Image 1: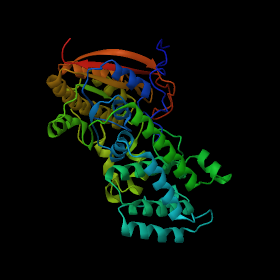
Image 2: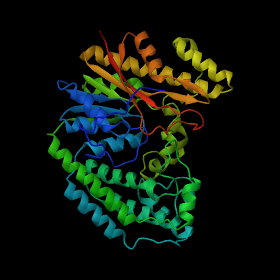
Image 3: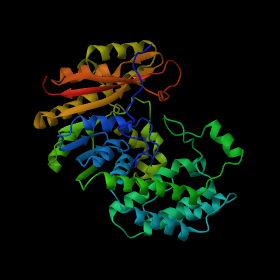
Image 4: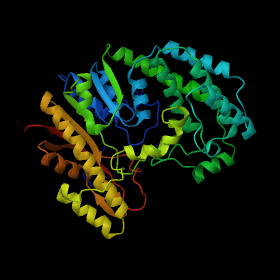
Length: 423
């Protein structure tokens, strides 16, 4: 039984403050934790996060008036981070969304036929970058498809800056899962669950006007809070590979002296699958390239892993997985840590230049009864690469329902590793 206690940092930040609640992003940073870590380094000039997720670090650094360089290989993550951390005039946002809704009237209702929805899809795809996802009627009711097409057509016609367009698309991203047949409450990926089917059978319907208005108000409120919290800062968000982050720093001549990041969990949350709907509807990934997205995430390549390059603890865990017949999972694990050694080397390059500090927030993992202490494994890799690491804190996870597969013991503790280049 763990002795770690839940984080008690709510005095630093309410998790629903600012723009944090725009998009449900499983596995995201706990905002009060990021606020706390930033507060430990008031002297930091530039904050960096090479795996920015939904932008929690960027938003919190923005609230403290700190410039930053952020990246992710997930284009949706980059869109959300840009939209949530770069302020747009809230009155313009609310007025524009109100106009989009008015122009789209009348919205289609339950009973719309797929054939009619196909006509709207053809019009949308013929005049914009936006695309209906494969198997669209598996994921969406026909009337919802019509309303999505109408809304996106109007978004495309708004003449505004790229920053403002990001805000409009982020609102759309925030509501998309909620109005789909896919269960919005699952963490691992994308699926139409029995619970969701039962709700639809019992009369669940989706109100586009309500969802658009609600998300627009939420984002506008967050912008007002950010405007009060800080002055103008320099923020760059780039779709980029964490394993090459120092090259991005050189390209932008922006070297973080404080890095706060969290690597994706090993297959626990399959973002490449979870975000397929957003990738298509928002025109972020061409339909024909959707199958390739999986390969971009840590550990998900096809190359044969070099097991002997890894610390002994990881090699032993690899052997345990093979012993229980999980050879494929063992390869994913080994590739994940080979990739991790590369992004940790990037952290070292940056800290050597700035003399700064990095924090890595990470939980353990479990697979068919084999428990992997991921924080310890990353410490071994970092130490062998010449970095100085320590477990800065541990805390009990309040919501531990993220592991994949879900059978067996659940991981209940997350760790914060502190990394420097000297003791």
